[in-house]
Length: 344
Image (cartoon, rainbow, N blue to C red):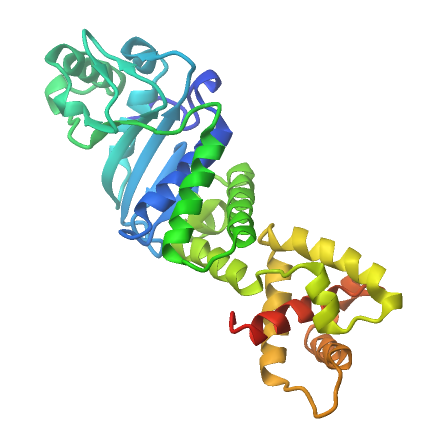
């Protein structure tokens, strides 16, 4: 079977990138308890789902199309969306689990409309099935009898064009509050912002060839369950307190409060962006604080500066980023507060 369509084919009018990101987040919540998933955005297709983030043996592909009205079978076939999905059955050395055509609206078939959450192509009326099979057979130059629609499904997403992000934020909030009953509102907001920022970055990465190795695709374009868990755990750990609590607990000198406030603002921003350097710095500082008890008679501010100096010996190459700043001191206070409250 030869695929004559370009792998990135499709109409931009029906393909809203920001809604794809919301759909991936939505699916991550839906599949969290059943799969060690890996999502890949905008590479082999709009959304690619691997059942196991450690290997590419079982995979599903999804085309996502959105419109304010409805999509007809004529449009879907003429644009090549269905044949593009079908072409994945020819991918060597993998098991294709599902081929999904996702829309936010009704799909108007021949004398039939499908709008259920999930509908197998094989259950469409005979007229629609015949039309789809003939289109695929013609494009791939195979006999109609060879066309197998058993893995193809239409999925009606619960997300809407206007409110998709709000809907997902509500879903994630409910999910996190159910999983972690004591989680704070600010922590939930941090997790949501971190995931959206990461998915945007992964989707926007365009310097991959179509024949890139699985591990490269995973690194550059993937969002896995383990990454999601890391973001959740990290946000719960850091759980940045109010600045007034940082001032009080850290015993910050009055003449340094303005600089500390600027550092606090930067930490708030960095903690929501899932930055590699921030994550590494946080982990190193957390280890130092756990391994470094306060001395008898030592004030909090002196202790915090001692921890900062220890970090400088462990990460000398990155210290230039924190020169003339109280970033590390304020970060250390955040971690020490979390430790004292039993969050770490």
